Length: 307
Image (tube, rainbow, N blue to C red; front, side, top):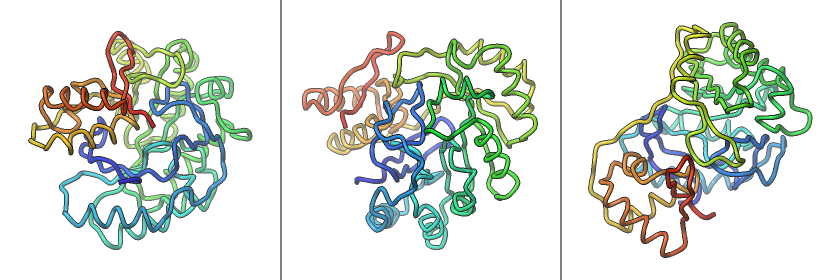
Protein backbone atom coordinates (compact mmCIF):
# COMPACT_ATOMS: atom_id res chain seq x y z
CA UNK A 1 0.00 0.00 0.00
CA UNK A 2 1.34 3.42 -0.97
CA UNK A 3 -1.25 5.77 0.50
CA UNK A 4 -2.85 3.98 3.44
CA UNK A 5 -1.05 2.61 6.48
CA UNK A 6 -1.94 0.66 9.60
CA UNK A 7 -4.22 0.18 11.32
CA UNK A 8 -2.10 1.42 14.22
CA UNK A 9 -3.00 2.25 17.78
CA UNK A 10 -3.10 6.03 18.10
CA UNK A 11 -2.65 7.59 21.53
CA UNK A 12 -5.71 9.72 20.84
CA UNK A 13 -7.92 7.79 18.44
CA UNK A 14 -7.55 4.12 19.29
CA UNK A 15 -7.22 1.76 16.32
CA UNK A 16 -6.76 4.05 13.32
CA UNK A 17 -6.28 3.44 9.60
CA UNK A 18 -4.11 6.24 8.24
CA UNK A 19 -4.31 7.90 4.83
CA UNK A 20 -1.41 9.89 3.31
CA UNK A 21 -2.60 12.60 0.94
CA UNK A 22 0.72 14.37 0.35
CA UNK A 23 4.21 13.01 -0.39
CA UNK A 24 7.04 13.11 2.13
CA UNK A 25 7.42 15.90 3.33
CA UNK A 26 5.02 18.42 1.82
CA UNK A 27 3.59 20.74 4.45
CA UNK A 28 2.55 24.31 5.16
CA UNK A 29 4.82 24.39 8.22
CA UNK A 30 8.19 23.07 9.32
CA UNK A 31 7.53 22.40 13.01
CA UNK A 32 10.55 21.96 15.24
CA UNK A 33 9.10 18.86 16.88
CA UNK A 34 7.77 17.03 13.81
CA UNK A 35 8.33 13.28 14.10
CA UNK A 36 8.19 12.81 10.32
CA UNK A 37 11.23 15.03 9.74
CA UNK A 38 12.10 18.39 8.23
CA UNK A 39 9.76 19.82 5.62
CA UNK A 40 11.23 19.57 2.14
CA UNK A 41 8.46 21.47 0.35
CA UNK A 42 6.79 24.23 2.36
CA UNK A 43 3.68 25.48 0.59
CA UNK A 44 0.12 26.74 0.91
CA UNK A 45 -0.81 25.55 -2.57
CA UNK A 46 -3.57 22.96 -2.72
CA UNK A 47 -3.16 20.29 -5.40
CA UNK A 48 -3.78 16.62 -6.17
CA UNK A 49 -0.43 15.63 -4.68
CA UNK A 50 -1.25 11.91 -4.85
CA UNK A 51 -3.55 10.19 -7.38
CA UNK A 52 -7.14 10.37 -6.15
CA UNK A 53 -8.22 7.11 -7.81
CA UNK A 54 -5.24 5.21 -6.42
CA UNK A 55 -6.17 6.29 -2.88
CA UNK A 56 -9.76 5.14 -3.45
CA UNK A 57 -8.60 1.81 -4.85
CA UNK A 58 -6.37 1.09 -1.87
CA UNK A 59 -9.16 2.01 0.54
CA UNK A 60 -11.66 -0.11 -1.38
CA UNK A 61 -9.34 -3.10 -1.27
CA UNK A 62 -8.50 -2.79 2.43
CA UNK A 63 -12.02 -2.01 3.61
CA UNK A 64 -13.43 -4.97 1.66
CA UNK A 65 -12.17 -7.12 4.55
CA UNK A 66 -14.40 -5.13 6.93
CA UNK A 67 -11.65 -4.40 9.48
CA UNK A 68 -12.60 -3.48 13.03
CA UNK A 69 -11.16 0.01 13.35
CA UNK A 70 -12.14 3.08 15.31
CA UNK A 71 -11.29 5.72 12.70
CA UNK A 72 -10.04 6.34 9.20
CA UNK A 73 -7.60 9.18 9.77
CA UNK A 74 -6.21 11.74 7.34
CA UNK A 75 -2.65 12.23 8.58
CA UNK A 76 0.80 10.97 7.61
CA UNK A 77 3.70 12.72 5.90
CA UNK A 78 2.44 16.32 5.78
CA UNK A 79 -0.62 18.58 5.96
CA UNK A 80 -3.67 16.66 4.65
CA UNK A 81 -5.76 19.73 3.78
CA UNK A 82 -3.24 20.61 1.05
CA UNK A 83 -4.83 17.77 -0.95
CA UNK A 84 -7.25 19.56 -3.25
CA UNK A 85 -9.67 16.62 -3.60
CA UNK A 86 -10.05 16.01 0.13
CA UNK A 87 -13.74 16.95 0.06
CA UNK A 88 -14.46 14.44 -2.69
CA UNK A 89 -12.68 11.74 -0.73
CA UNK A 90 -14.59 12.53 2.46
CA UNK A 91 -17.91 12.33 0.62
CA UNK A 92 -16.95 9.09 -1.15
CA UNK A 93 -16.02 7.38 2.12
CA UNK A 94 -19.15 8.61 3.87
CA UNK A 95 -21.39 7.45 1.01
CA UNK A 96 -19.88 3.97 0.86
CA UNK A 97 -18.77 3.10 4.40
CA UNK A 98 -19.87 3.57 7.98
CA UNK A 99 -16.45 4.22 9.50
CA UNK A 100 -15.83 7.41 11.45
CA UNK A 101 -13.36 9.89 9.99
CA UNK A 102 -10.68 11.91 11.77
CA UNK A 103 -8.34 14.65 10.57
CA UNK A 104 -4.95 15.52 12.08
CA UNK A 105 -4.13 19.03 10.91
CA UNK A 106 -2.03 22.09 11.69
CA UNK A 107 -5.09 24.29 10.96
CA UNK A 108 -3.11 26.39 8.48
CA UNK A 109 -5.77 26.44 5.75
CA UNK A 110 -8.94 26.89 7.78
CA UNK A 111 -9.10 30.53 6.74
CA UNK A 112 -10.10 29.27 3.29
CA UNK A 113 -13.83 28.62 2.88
CA UNK A 114 -13.29 25.78 0.41
CA UNK A 115 -11.20 23.92 2.99
CA UNK A 116 -13.92 24.26 5.63
CA UNK A 117 -16.41 22.91 3.11
CA UNK A 118 -14.11 19.99 2.27
CA UNK A 119 -13.71 18.88 5.88
CA UNK A 120 -17.37 19.30 6.79
CA UNK A 121 -18.55 15.78 7.50
CA UNK A 122 -15.38 14.58 9.21
CA UNK A 123 -16.37 13.29 12.64
CA UNK A 124 -13.39 14.48 14.69
CA UNK A 125 -10.94 17.21 13.70
CA UNK A 126 -7.74 17.56 15.71
CA UNK A 127 -6.08 20.92 14.92
CA UNK A 128 -2.78 22.02 16.45
CA UNK A 129 -2.41 25.31 18.31
CA UNK A 130 1.14 25.61 19.66
CA UNK A 131 1.41 29.36 20.15
CA UNK A 132 -0.52 32.49 21.02
CA UNK A 133 1.93 35.12 19.71
CA UNK A 134 3.39 35.57 16.25
CA UNK A 135 6.96 35.43 17.57
CA UNK A 136 6.43 32.03 19.19
CA UNK A 137 4.40 30.77 16.22
CA UNK A 138 7.25 31.51 13.85
CA UNK A 139 9.76 29.95 16.21
CA UNK A 140 8.00 26.65 16.88
CA UNK A 141 5.95 26.07 13.70
CA UNK A 142 8.12 27.84 11.08
CA UNK A 143 5.08 28.54 8.85
CA UNK A 144 4.87 29.28 5.15
CA UNK A 145 5.23 32.93 4.23
CA UNK A 146 1.97 34.80 4.72
CA UNK A 147 0.66 32.66 7.59
CA UNK A 148 0.16 34.29 10.98
CA UNK A 149 -1.17 33.10 14.32
CA UNK A 150 -4.35 35.20 13.99
CA UNK A 151 -5.24 33.25 10.84
CA UNK A 152 -4.79 29.97 12.71
CA UNK A 153 -6.94 31.01 15.68
CA UNK A 154 -9.65 32.56 13.52
CA UNK A 155 -9.66 29.49 11.29
CA UNK A 156 -10.20 27.16 14.24
CA UNK A 157 -12.95 29.49 15.51
CA UNK A 158 -14.69 29.29 12.12
CA UNK A 159 -14.32 25.51 12.16
CA UNK A 160 -16.00 25.23 15.54
CA UNK A 161 -18.84 27.59 14.57
CA UNK A 162 -19.52 26.35 11.03
CA UNK A 163 -18.78 22.63 11.01
CA UNK A 164 -20.59 19.95 12.93
CA UNK A 165 -17.38 18.10 13.72
CA UNK A 166 -16.11 17.42 17.21
CA UNK A 167 -12.92 19.47 17.71
CA UNK A 168 -9.99 18.41 19.88
CA UNK A 169 -7.27 21.07 19.94
CA UNK A 170 -3.75 19.83 20.64
CA UNK A 171 -0.98 22.02 22.03
CA UNK A 172 2.47 20.49 21.94
CA UNK A 173 4.83 22.13 24.41
CA UNK A 174 8.56 22.39 23.72
CA UNK A 175 11.06 23.28 26.40
CA UNK A 176 12.20 26.89 26.14
CA UNK A 177 10.01 27.64 23.11
CA UNK A 178 6.32 27.91 24.04
CA UNK A 179 6.36 27.08 27.76
CA UNK A 180 6.86 30.55 29.25
CA UNK A 181 4.27 31.67 31.77
CA UNK A 182 3.09 34.43 29.45
CA UNK A 183 2.69 32.14 26.44
CA UNK A 184 0.91 29.46 28.47
CA UNK A 185 -1.54 32.04 29.85
CA UNK A 186 -2.27 33.43 26.40
CA UNK A 187 -2.80 29.97 24.92
CA UNK A 188 -5.10 29.17 27.84
CA UNK A 189 -7.21 32.27 27.19
CA UNK A 190 -7.61 31.25 23.54
CA UNK A 191 -8.68 27.75 24.53
CA UNK A 192 -11.27 29.09 26.99
CA UNK A 193 -12.61 31.38 24.24
CA UNK A 194 -12.76 28.71 21.54
CA UNK A 195 -14.27 26.06 23.83
CA UNK A 196 -13.22 22.88 21.98
CA UNK A 197 -14.67 19.55 23.10
CA UNK A 198 -11.16 18.66 24.28
CA UNK A 199 -7.87 20.44 24.83
CA UNK A 200 -5.10 17.87 24.57
CA UNK A 201 -1.67 18.87 25.85
CA UNK A 202 1.35 17.00 24.64
CA UNK A 203 5.12 17.28 24.38
CA UNK A 204 8.06 15.94 22.39
CA UNK A 205 7.77 12.15 22.69
CA UNK A 206 9.52 10.93 19.51
CA UNK A 207 12.72 11.93 17.73
CA UNK A 208 11.99 15.46 16.44
CA UNK A 209 12.98 17.12 13.19
CA UNK A 210 15.16 19.60 15.06
CA UNK A 211 17.14 19.45 18.29
CA UNK A 212 14.44 20.25 20.84
CA UNK A 213 13.29 18.58 24.05
CA UNK A 214 9.96 18.13 25.76
CA UNK A 215 8.44 18.84 29.13
CA UNK A 216 8.02 16.39 31.98
CA UNK A 217 4.65 14.93 32.91
CA UNK A 218 4.75 17.08 36.06
CA UNK A 219 5.22 20.21 33.96
CA UNK A 220 2.30 19.26 31.71
CA UNK A 221 0.18 18.58 34.78
CA UNK A 222 1.06 22.03 36.15
CA UNK A 223 -0.03 23.63 32.85
CA UNK A 224 -3.31 21.72 33.00
CA UNK A 225 -3.95 22.94 36.54
CA UNK A 226 -2.87 26.50 35.75
CA UNK A 227 -5.21 26.91 32.79
CA UNK A 228 -8.10 25.05 34.40
CA UNK A 229 -9.93 24.20 31.20
CA UNK A 230 -12.44 21.50 32.24
CA UNK A 231 -11.95 19.24 29.20
CA UNK A 232 -8.14 19.07 29.33
CA UNK A 233 -6.35 15.80 28.67
CA UNK A 234 -2.66 14.97 28.95
CA UNK A 235 -2.08 12.59 26.06
CA UNK A 236 -1.05 9.10 27.16
CA UNK A 237 0.10 5.97 25.33
CA UNK A 238 -2.46 3.30 24.50
CA UNK A 239 -1.91 -0.45 24.73
CA UNK A 240 -3.19 -3.18 22.44
CA UNK A 241 -4.10 -6.80 22.92
CA UNK A 242 -1.50 -9.21 21.57
CA UNK A 243 -2.09 -11.08 18.32
CA UNK A 244 -0.18 -13.42 16.03
CA UNK A 245 1.06 -12.29 12.62
CA UNK A 246 3.48 -13.80 10.07
CA UNK A 247 6.95 -12.23 10.23
CA UNK A 248 6.60 -10.87 6.68
CA UNK A 249 3.40 -9.02 7.65
CA UNK A 250 4.97 -7.77 10.88
CA UNK A 251 7.92 -6.33 8.98
CA UNK A 252 5.66 -4.58 6.50
CA UNK A 253 3.44 -3.16 9.26
CA UNK A 254 6.46 -1.98 11.27
CA UNK A 255 8.05 -0.29 8.28
CA UNK A 256 4.79 1.46 7.35
CA UNK A 257 4.49 2.66 10.95
CA UNK A 258 8.04 3.84 11.67
CA UNK A 259 8.61 5.64 8.38
CA UNK A 260 5.82 7.98 9.50
CA UNK A 261 6.36 8.02 13.27
CA UNK A 262 9.54 6.69 14.93
CA UNK A 263 8.79 4.31 17.81
CA UNK A 264 10.69 2.31 20.44
CA UNK A 265 10.31 -1.48 20.35
CA UNK A 266 7.73 -1.64 23.15
CA UNK A 267 5.53 0.96 21.47
CA UNK A 268 5.77 -0.85 18.14
CA UNK A 269 4.57 -4.01 19.87
CA UNK A 270 1.69 -2.12 21.51
CA UNK A 271 0.76 -0.33 18.30
CA UNK A 272 0.57 -3.55 16.28
CA UNK A 273 -0.77 -5.69 19.10
CA UNK A 274 2.13 -8.19 18.95
CA UNK A 275 4.64 -9.55 21.42
CA UNK A 276 7.80 -7.53 22.02
CA UNK A 277 10.09 -10.40 21.02
CA UNK A 278 8.24 -10.65 17.69
CA UNK A 279 8.63 -6.91 17.15
CA UNK A 280 12.33 -7.10 18.03
CA UNK A 281 12.95 -9.99 15.65
CA UNK A 282 11.23 -8.15 12.79
CA UNK A 283 13.09 -4.92 13.57
CA UNK A 284 16.44 -6.75 13.53
CA UNK A 285 15.63 -8.09 10.08
CA UNK A 286 14.63 -4.62 8.87
CA UNK A 287 17.87 -3.22 10.31
CA UNK A 288 19.92 -5.84 8.46
CA UNK A 289 18.03 -4.97 5.27
CA UNK A 290 18.83 -1.28 5.94
CA UNK A 291 15.17 -0.32 5.70
CA UNK A 292 15.16 1.20 9.19
CA UNK A 293 17.67 2.74 11.57
CA UNK A 294 18.02 3.22 15.32
CA UNK A 295 17.91 6.80 16.63
CA UNK A 296 18.57 7.69 20.26
CA UNK A 297 16.14 10.16 21.82
CA UNK A 298 16.17 10.73 25.57
CA UNK A 299 18.49 7.72 25.91
CA UNK A 300 15.75 5.54 24.39
CA UNK A 301 16.41 3.80 21.05
CA UNK A 302 13.70 4.62 18.50
CA UNK A 303 13.23 2.76 15.24
CA UNK A 304 12.94 5.12 12.28
CA UNK A 305 12.07 4.07 8.74
CA UNK A 306 14.23 5.15 5.81
CA UNK A 307 12.12 6.84 3.15
